[in-house]
Image (tube, rainbow, N blue to C red; front, side, top):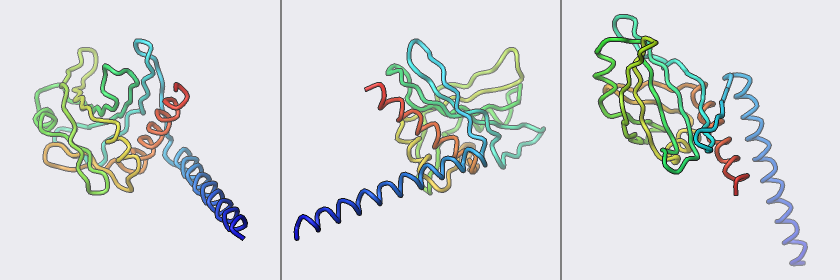
Length: 184
């Protein structure tokens, strides 16, 4: 009798695991179709680096037609941050954008705040843009990827990452974890 019960519980647990995995894969497939998820991989100093494509920051309304895009990346290089968020403005002058970007920057995942460390603000010579580079632990990316809603906070305002941004974060995390498993 005990063997039948153990066998029944084992079969049930396996069926639940298969159903959850199938549901997760179906969600990923749907996100690919809807959100146009694109992750690029390159090697820097022999270590893989993955990054999403640039996504417009929804709801950012600044004077003078300034637009802000963002990108996330991961790196397997132990000397670099495992997770990086970069904000890019099309502004060339010292403006409100730079003042906002130099304030604290955080990601908000399902209401929980994850502070990011601001590394630098860069101006570009060949393109009219200002970049703000921030870093954080891979656990921050995992929190955002697992969230139903996520926002970036800077300049004392919050901006939604949206479905497309969340889909990019999920795929980036999934690929980084899959690659880490194969490297072991």
